[in-house]
Length: 230
Image (tube, rainbow, N blue to C red; front, top):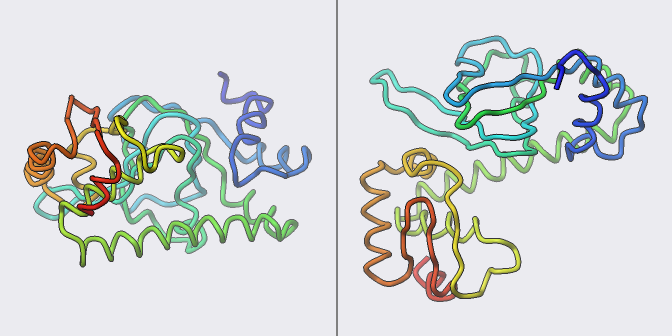
């Protein structure tokens, strides 16, 4: 794909939930302020403290948002997957990035410039509502995370995570497999656990016969039994 070809960008923008329902001329205006970014696995998209000139949409791949402590340890805040956007709140605050973003796989992103978004928001209050709803959902998820870290044991956090990863139609079935979307270390950090603690709990759950671990694949013989331990 050629980043300079607006037709590609417009086609990609139509798949983004935030922009669904926009008229072709509105999409055209947004496309003019949008560029494609290809990142290789491991590449840093932006560092903490970099200026924020817009927000990103992930077309495919996986991005990790994280902090690094003064001791050099890392805390994963969020794992962004295909179709998700990030950076809107910082863009509205007009502050530098407070996290860094790194590609966990090869990725294609769209960067939508702040100026074009602000102009479109003046024109279209519907887009305002959609962006607010998106940010409210992120805030709600963040509150859930804080509650989980504060009140739930490591075991409850991991079981809750596995249950969230289940397909919608298999919430109460048996013999279901969940494939972890990224490495165990990244997921452990996302759940505020050390990798050792994460592995130990997976081992405990295996001993109880609640899961069977095969690399990144987690087999769940009975979802109701796993749910009882949450």
